[in-house]
Length: 354
Ligand code: ADP
Image 1 (cartoon, rainbow, N blue to C red):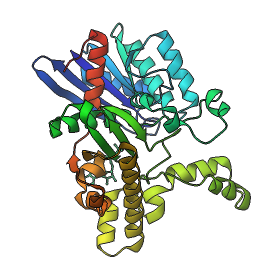
Image 2: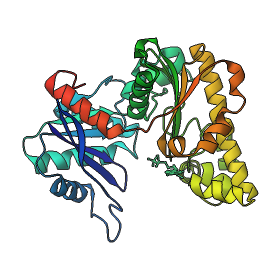
Image 3: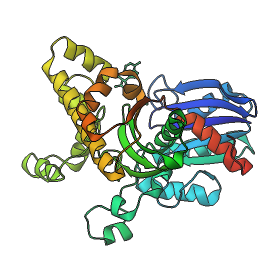
């Protein structure tokens, strides 16, 4: 089966064609359409999908990364009118992410004729979280009526690397306790027991938890009130500050890219050093917390651009954690597209492909 995998962001579309059969799995086409909606780029997401389809050639099915599946979807699902309506409903919960996913689905459906489409939700892996883990300390009706809870994101990546880590450890996933660290532009840490997510650092939105490229991670909500009252900032300004101007970029005043910061810190830049220290400390704190949640871990697993490529950052995060007990440190390159392609084939065939 040739599966086209579409992963849409607000201004980019990443795509891959993955061939799955008994002989193995091969990435046959890979590309990105950038600057959607900007001069010189694709006009809109439909235009971007058209470009991807032209390069893809004939495909048997399309797998869509969909960021938010609310509480309804615990697994990938074939998209029909009902699923489309649910993805649209979840736009309220993920206003930056679900609309481009939906636009790409609609474009691919219209342009491709009869090929089946499958949605693979970033949130699905975290539907195993228990209420005492996913609830915030708000009056319960804010969950029951308004659906405010921890949803978690990066689920496809955590699911892929945790399964792969179990293989590398030579143990069945059911017997593994893992702490998986996805450190890219967006960052999250997940506690996995027996192949199921137990806790995750991203929350109601992808702002909570770790320091990220431009997002602030955990912050006292009192800061919002103060910025609005004392500095007269508007809600949109505070949102922009937390999402686009904070994290590594805001702390360093220089870059959201860890490569730049490591280089700058090495040549004596204090703010770059500080940004790295805050980043590593926050990650260490989550690993310690999840160690307690799991009662120990077989391995701490790193993935994502930073997790896979920056041994110095991994070392700084893990420094001092040896007193927790024995654990392996694994680096597992993530491959969300492959898992989306496998899920697509599994849902359509009603069987596991591997
Ligand atoms: P995204 O989350 O957007 O998919 P990535 O997973 O590529 O992004 O992560 C981006 C981060 O990873 C940046 O901070 C970048 O500096 C770092 N990174 C990516 N590739 C490398 C590399 N080859 N060497 C060092 N750092 C890298």
